[in-house]
Image: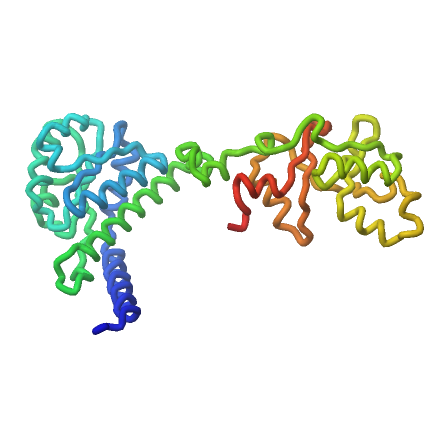
Length: 325
C-alpha cells in the first residue's frame, strides 16, 4: 500500500483530538445559558439539522431521550414542509449547522420565532445567519476537517457530537438521573436487565430450596444437597436459619475422614453466612458474591427473618452477566 494505514489512522485520531481541545477551550457562558434554557423549559428539545448535521442531530436527540430529557429530531428539510407543527412555544430548538448558513435550517428561524420557541444554535460560525438569529450560540467551530481534502465533515461532526454529549451529561447530573432511571428506558436490553432485575426474579423457591435440621446426620445432608442440586443446604433450627452448608464445607470436613460420618449438620455449617433479600437488585447480589476475598456461589434469600429462596451465582451470570464486565 502507498500509505502506512496504522500511522495515518493515528494521525486522524490525533488531529481530531486536537480540534476537540480547541472547541473545548472555546466553551463560554453560553453553554450554561443553554442548559438553563432547557431546564426551565416546560416543553421538549427539538433537534434539527440536515445532511451530516442531521445525522449527528438524530444521535444527540436519541441520547437526550434515553437520559431523561424529552426530545425529538426534525429534519430541517421536512420542517419547511409541515413538520414545524411539532414545535410549540414551550419548546427549545437546538439547530445544528456547521456553516450556520444552511438554507433549509436558516429558513426555519422566522417560523420558530413566530411560534415562540427559543433557539440554541450549535454552529462553527457564530456570525452566521443561524448564529445571529438564535437566543444562544454554542461554538463548535474547527480550524480544519480531518478529511485529507478538507471537504468531508469529520472534525466538525465530531465536535458537534461531543458538545451534544456534554449537554446530555450535564443535564443528567443536574436532574440527578440514576441508573434505574436509565434502565427504565432500556428494559429490553442487557443493561436494562442488569439494572432492573431483582433477586426475586432469579431465585429458586418452594420445594427447590434445600433444608435440613441442625441435628441431621452428614450423610442425609449430602443426599439433600445432591437431590436439590443448588450446591448448598440451609440449616434450620425450627423455622430459623442458623447456618449454611456448602459443597466447600463438605470438602473441608472430608479432611477428617475418620470422623466425617459422625458429624451432624451443626458441626460443619457456616454460621456467619452471607445472605440477601428478595427485593435486592440482582446485580447487587452478584457483586456480593464476586467482590470478596473468597467468592461464594450461593446465597440464601431471607425476608423478615424467614428463608424464602436461594440464588446461585450461575443463575445471576446467565441473566445479567458478571458484575466485573
